[in-house]
Length: 209
Image (cartoon, rainbow, N blue to C red):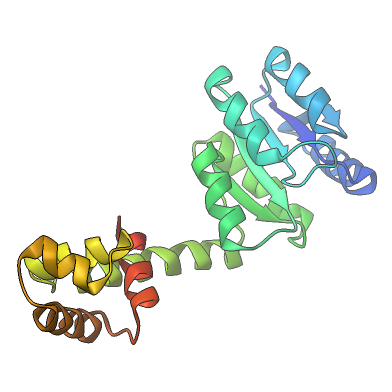
């Protein structure tokens, strides 16, 4: 049985190049080409392809939104983003939406073929640069979580109130302590989190939560 692949890509030349290389393989075939998001959203479910190569920024719709809507309706289909976007927000939004892989259009076409095969087997193919960014993100998150564990219960409570937008005096009133005590706690928080201001401290707190 050949791997049935659908392509959602508004760049007609790239879409056709993908179709040509897919149809050239003995173990896969292109069952559909879509050049806009609306048609893909309407027709993909009925086609039931094994793998969908999805562009992120289509002219009419977001590929991420399409993946989010279709993953629940198409549990037997694997979605792989194939796009020129490499920023962290797009990467993690696509993965959260249900994409199983993330490829960059600059990758050689034979790498994309390997990615289709890997995705069909249940893998999570990613371009080297993307995989590196994902790994770096989780390493940074781990360090931040470990750093936050250094805070005492009181310091965490103060930081949480700070994140809610409370002023030093309001936090002091809420904790029934002096403003100087709160300033001391905040000084300890800055030192432990290795930050120099309130914004940086809150950002670290929000990343963890």
